[in-house]
Every structure is written in C-alpha cells, then in structure tokens.
Image 1: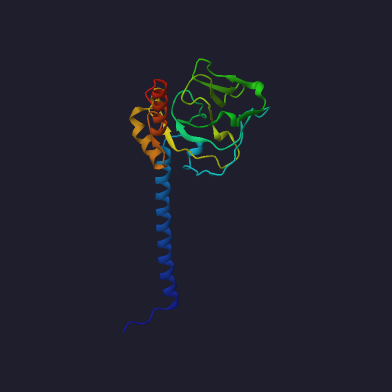
Image 2: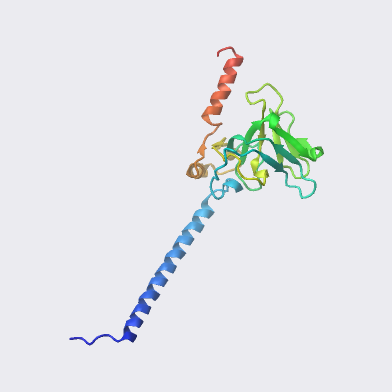
Length: 228
C-alpha cells in the first residue's frame, strides 16, 4: 500500500497545477488580444462616431446645439427637435472628419434650424450645388445644408449631429453612396470589407439613398410630371 502523500507534496502539486492554469490563461488572453488588435487594424476607419458601433438614440429627444470646431467664437446652430433619416454618407460633397471614409448626416425641418451664435463666420461652400452647405470660414466644418430650389427635399436641412455635445440624437439608419468612396481614392478591392463592416453594425449599404428615400424622390418626380 502506497504511503499517503505529505501535505507539503500535495501543496506543491496544487501550486504547479495553478501555475500551469495561470500560464495557459495568460497565453489565451494574449492570443485574443492579438486577434482583436489585428482585426481592429484591418477595419476601415468609417467615422469616429461609429468606432464602437451604433449608439441607439432617444425617440423623445428634444434637440440641442451644434458647434463648429473653432476654439474661439464657434458658430452655433440650434436644432429645435430630433433629426430624421440619419445615415453614413460616402459622397464627396458632405463634410467628413479628418481621416474618415464617411460623413454621418441627417435631415431636420428647416423651421427647426436656427443659427444662434457667430453667423458672420458662415460661408456657402458651393453656390452652384443643390444643397447650399453653410460652413465655418475658419475651421471648414459644415454647419447645415439648405435647399433653396425646387427639389424633393426642399424644406429639410442637412446637419451633422456629431457636432453636438448632447446625446439622444437619432442613430444612423443606413449607409448611402457607399461606392463613392472609391471615386475619392479608396481601394475598390476592399469594398467588400467596408460593406461587411457596415452591415455588422446594422447599417445596410446602398450606392444611392435608402429605398424609402429613393421612392420619395421618384414619387415627387412623378407628381411633377402629373403621373401621380
């Protein structure tokens, strides 16, 4: 019959087992960290507000203030309600933060938009464009876009809610003009990854606007032609 193991031997065995377990857990954590780091590096920089996914907005949110990036005399625009049709946009006209592939832009009724500070700094970026984008002449940020001509979206202003310190704005709903980032120099071979990344956060990618908005444009056109 084997002699019983001494308490010291048993303790040494437990310590050895614990050491192996700890080393295994540390190695597994290192592998997971390395995988996440590689995955993060391979992901496209869509937009700063999308870096951690889409944050759900508040349907009861009552509006807030947008501010340009100037440290001195920032332009302020007050919005009297929540926005509509918020989305990521890949077109070359919308303002994007430095290094971002997409803008995040929404619309709001024109009568709910008011320049509340330093309106003298605003300039229209391109007076020939359908959307008159009013930008700060100092920092270049687009504060709001307005349509002055006959257009399906006339009466709605385009705004960037990321310029607000308040939370509760409607979250992005989809991604528009996705393929336009190729026209601005993005590698077309990586577009599949970009679309997958957008879908992973619940943003269906379109190469125009979302189907409901495209239907609205078509209906407006049909009405103009007395087809509806």
